[in-house]
Length: 98
Ligand SMILES: [Zn+2]
Image (cartoon, rainbow, N blue to C red; front, side, top):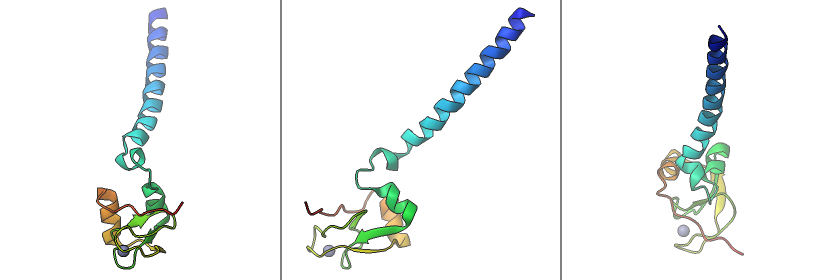
């Protein structure tokens, strides 16, 4: 009987540990979160992006300039095409003024 109780407690603990590990695991396994130096996650959450009018593949989460033409980036709602580039990681990172 005592063994049974121990097993039940042990299983409960294991489930709790597994559940908490699983939660943090999904977060760190997200490729966007892992390489999110340019605020990709933030852009996806807000749906707003700083982009170049001439080069919509240039995307950032804060004001900057286009590395291709030097134009100042403008803030706008992200388009479906841009969202695709962003999630695929094939977008161009802007130059940020220091
Ligand atoms: Zn440009």
